[in-house]
Amino acid sequence: MLYSPADGVNQSIRRKPALVVALWFLFSASSAGQPDWKSLVRRDHPRLFFNAATWPAVKSLALGAESTTFAEMKERVEELLRSEVSSGDHGAQAAEAALVFLVSGNTRYRDLATRLLTQSIHYYQECQRSGKSVNWYSFSRISAWAAYDWLFNHLPPEERVRLGSSFLEAVQNVQPTRARKAFFRENWGGPRSGF
Image 1 (cartoon, rainbow, N blue to C red):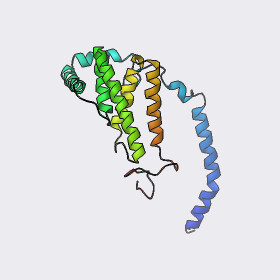
Image 2 (image 1 turned 45 degrees about the vertical axis):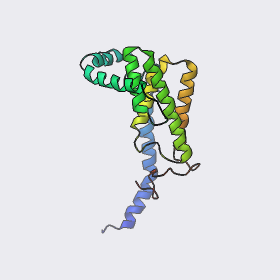
Image 3 (image 1 turned 135 degrees about the vertical axis):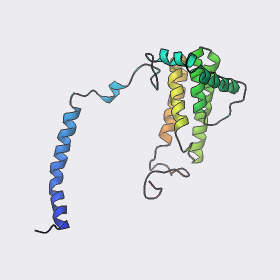
Image 4 (image 1 turned 180 degrees about the horizontal axis):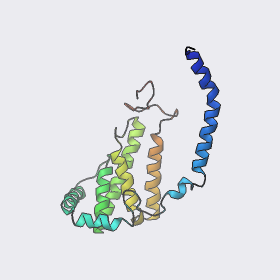
């Protein structure tokens, strides 16, 4: 008997309910007994890229084998201390200042990192109001989140809330929804913007 495309379509339509049921059983069996995903999120800080248990090794590297790299980073942060911090995307610089603070304990670096995060948030808000993207890449915003996480234990509770809620608002404002138009050169992955 010759194969007809219509036969394949009919067979696939008939098999769909069975496939759906099989996938449901497979998924429910694999998720049975699994903890709720929220219970897997660490409650302590820091938790991005390192944590309290791994921090001593990170600090040891910064002061030992990677001391040259750390010294260069510290010099960049010192230069920022001597300059005016304007509105802009300063996530990477905030992460460097936060790391230098954690290694040195000098609160000047914590305060600088906090100012850089605040200026970054203002910049994110300006971009959102202007209908433009912060950056094509998200590296600096990932660094900003890391800096916030690393500073968390060293910030007053009201500062934690102010920065954290501002970051979450900035993230919410860039989600592709029908409530807003796409930013200039923003790619939502559809037939109008490309894949």
